[in-house]
Length: 83
Image (tube, rainbow, N blue to C red; front, side, top):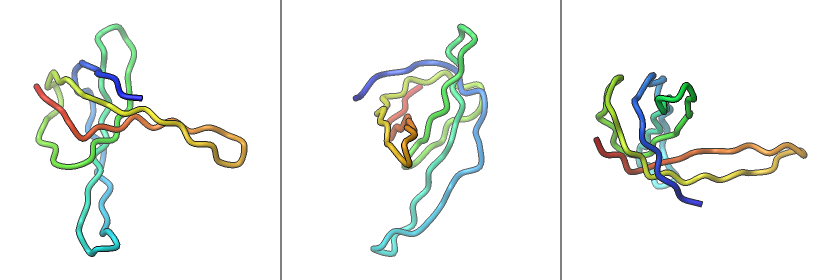
């Protein structure tokens, strides 16, 4: 499921980094996006990310849930952002 969110970046959390099986480095940035109505959204950003706290952005996100041990976990993931 894909949807578009727009809002202001409230926080940029510590990136997660690693190396793929093909020995290529990868980074996942983690941000908190404020919608302006008092609700926040935690988003994982794959790929290059140059935005800063306070930027107004438009994010095209994929929303997916996974089941693990009878509980469901939902990720909001994007690889595309624009100001």
